[in-house]
Amino acid sequence: MDSIDKLILNEVQDGIPIEKNPFKDIAIKLDITEDEIIKRINKLKQKGYIRRFGGIFDSQSLGIKSTLVAVKSKDVENTSKIINEYSGVTHNYQRKDDYNIWFTLMASSAEELENILKEIKERIKCEDIISLSCVNKHKVKVYLDFDNKG
Image 1 (cartoon, helix red, strand yellow):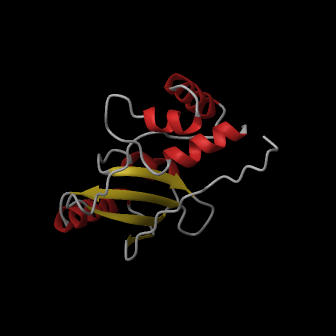
Image 2 (cartoon, one colour; image 1 turned 60 degrees about the vertical axis):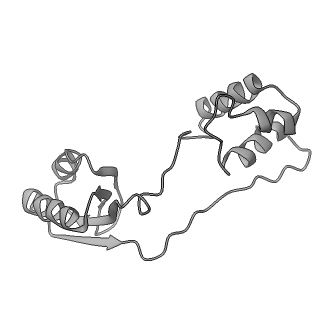
C-alpha cells in the first residue's frame, strides 16, 4: 500500500456522495483520475486491505430494532445453520468462549425482535442465550499516517 492508497482510504471512509461521479472531488484533491481511484480501491479489496466497500445506513433512524446475541451451544454447526435461516441476521460468527456463537439480529419492531429471539431459542435448544441491545453507539475510524515510506 502506497501513500496514495492511504490517502484514498482516509478520504472514502468519511463518505462518498451519491451522484454520477462520486470520486470526482477526491480525484481533484489527490490530483489523479477517478478511474485510478476505482482501480486502486479494487486492488486494495483484492489484496484484503478492504473487506467490504459499500453503503452503511443508520438502522435506528430508520426505525429498525437490532441486538447483538450471544449463545452457549454444544452443537455449533446446527445452531449456526438455524440462526442463518433468519433474514434479519446480519452477522454470525463463532468465538472461543463459553458463549461461542455471536450474531446480530434486526427486525422492524422490538416485539418482532423478541418473537424471533424466542423462536430461535426454542429451535436451537441451547444452554443459554442473551440479547445485548445497544446502549451507546460508536463509529471507529482509522486514519492512516503516511510518512513518505510508501
